[in-house]
Structure formats: structure tokens, C-alpha cells
Length: 535
Image (cartoon, rainbow, N blue to C red; front, side, top):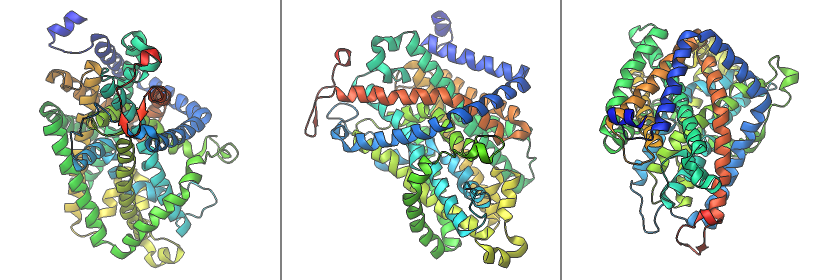
């Protein structure tokens, strides 16, 4: 394989690269040959996972969050992710925009209207009356629970572990490096390579699902604006076009490609949010931002530990509401965690553990809170909050919920029909989703390439292009597999794929703790990294 790699002009670990690429290609062929059998397998496996292990996903993320807060405020918070005299490579603003755009920008565009409306019309708690004031509050609380601190916890833990081991111990840029305290030199052996291959495949699937959601939203927008058919063929063509755009950014590189696109896109998304704030019920929304913070703060613990344990008595499927929402979110997000973790580690060299944890947890979560407060409250107000408001709206009540009934991807565009310059703003939304698509894809391609080379420096262009095209191919095949089932089929695939990655990230917490306990810290000064071999 090494000879083949040289002939192809590759610079990579041949075992990791060819096994990852080979298994991905095998899966793609399997989808072509037996799509129904694979679909049935994922449907059955997903049902088993959420029924028997949903509690594990919910408890696990809570443990990770508690661990990160403890690390940040402990004596370990002063440890610098790199040499003692190192400084951050990027400004705080660029750092934030890059991690956000590479993280969940597409998700906020997709769910910013759809999730609050869905919970508003069909509350998670069975005793809550739909469309009521209480349903609106619950909708905001659960939306933020799913995309606030807990989501960024799933990114922060592996990101911190990667940055610590890569920059303080000069280990390869691979997921296996995190397990050095346990595996020692075994990280370079079969077990270490198996970990890296699993992480690469999980990343490809996680990004592919996000590409699938983003593509569905772009297709919905083009359908509203230009009458483009909303079908599988259109979605596949959109993936092809935008994969080409993402590949161009991959060739340009991190600083000129991802950084520029991220800064442009976060500016456009912020402008869109301010447009809704200014042209909508401004005073209502300003009050809503403050009240939403209170709703999130007072409900985060009950929501975080709610396990829907009575579902077996109230639901025919046995696993209840959280199997389709919270468990799906955590399984999906954790497949992103190797990608986002290494990407955030790559742009965070020189920061202290405290800066890293608080920055990655709080800054995006705060933006997410404001985003949902503006879009979520606006959407629910348009649909009518409470009986009196809905009676006053008459036939116009529930118009966004009706659009969401066609699919969550239509929510944002139905929402903008209630604002000035509708077509212009809908077109801008399509552009923003497309750029978020590109930043997610090119960031993931750069990271997958790093996982193969073990180096922070970009590999040959053809390597990075291969992974960029591969992500598009997996996304296209998942779209074909999903067919009319759409989001449900994507949920099935990602929940199953997410389980082994979730277990892997759980183990990272113990590896990081073992290494930190070996640190010799005196005051705020951090000494030489310890020799983990002897601990």
C-alpha cells in the first residue's frame, strides 16, 4: 500500500487512509446494491439503541458538562495548550466565527424556526396544551437544551483532549493520540489505527447527515423562489454543485478558505437575525431574549435529566419523545465531535484550558440563545400564542406549523413570507445555508486529512479533494436511501453510527483526567509536560 500511495502522490498513513477509504466505498456500493436491506437494518438497530441506551446518551453528556466546568475552574485551568510561552494564533473574533461556522451554523438555519414551532404545536410533555403560553416556553427551553451548552459540550471535550495531547506532548493529530495514557506506544499499532478509522468514518457520516439537512433546506428555498422540484434528483444535483464549491475552498486552505468564508457567513447570518429583530416585534423580542435566558437557566436541569421513563406506558413504540429528538441530537452531534474537536484544537493552540472551555462552551451558546429567541418567538407569535391570539388570527393561525408539516426544511421560508422583501430575504437565506454547507464540508475535509496524515500541515491537494468529494458522495447516497422518508431515515443511520463514537468520547474523559493528574502545577505557572509513560 505504501508503494501505491507514492504512485498516487499521497502523504499519509497508508493503513488509516486506505482502510477508511475502502470501508466507505464498500458502504456506498452496499447502498447501491441493497438499499432496502440496509434501510431495514438501520431502522431496527436505531429502535434498539434508543430503547435500551437512550438513558446512556442523556446521562453521558451531563457528566461531560460537569467534568468540563470542574476542569475549567480547577488548578488545571491555567495549563496552556502548547508551550508555556505560546500565544493564540487567531483573534477571539476569528476564533469564534471559525468554530461556529464549522460547527452548527447549518443546524441553526435548519432548526431555528422549525424546532420551536414543532415543540409549540406538539409539546414534549404530554400534559402541556399545544399552542399555549406554557407550550411556547417549553419549546424555547428544549430548543436551547438541544443546541446550547450540551451540544457544545460534545464538541468541547474531545477538542480539549486533542489540543492537550497534540500540543503539549507533540503527538500526531489523531484521535488515537488522546488514548496515550492507556495505550502508550500502542496508539501507533492496530488498536490506535482502528480508533482513527472509526473516527474518520463517523465524521464522514455525521457531516453527510448535516449536508443532507442543508441540501433539503436549499432545495426547499429554491422550490419557493424558482419552482425547482423538491425531490431526490434536485437534492443530489445541489450536493454536486456545492461539493464543487467546498472543494475549491479546500484547495485554497484554512486561512484563505475556511477563515474567509466563516467570517463572511457569520456576518450574513447576524445581519439576517438583526433584520428579523428590527422588522418584527422588536420590543417583544428584546423582552423575549432576556426571558429566554431565564427559561433556559431555570429549566436546564429538569430538561437535562428528564429521561421519559414512562414512555413504555404511554407510547406504542416504547422509547418515547426523546428517541426522536434528544438521543438523535446527541448521537448526531457526537459523530461530528472528532471533526469539530480537532478543527477547534487546530485553531486554539496557545490558549489556556480555562479560556478554551469557557470560550467554546459559552460564546456559541450565547449566540444560539439570541438566535432562537429572535426566530423562535417570532415564529410562534406569527402562528398565534394562546387561544385568544389564534382566534384573532383566524385562518392565518398556524401557517408556519402547516409548512413544517411538509418538512422542517420549509419552516424558514414560510417564516420569511411574513416579512418585507420576502424573495430577497429567502434568497439570502439560501446563500447563507449554502456557505455554511461549504464551511462544514471543507473544514471536515481538512480535518479528515489531518487524521490520516497525523500532521497539522495540510496534505497534498489531491488527498483533501478526495475527502471533500467523498463527503458529498456519502451525503448523496444517504439522500437516495432516505428517499421520501427524509429526516426519519437520516435519524436512523446517525443514531446507530453515533453509539460507538459516543463510547469513544466517553473514554476520552478518563484519558484526559489521567494525564492532567500527572501535571506538576505550582500556582499559575505550568511546568514541563509530564512523562505519561511513567505515570
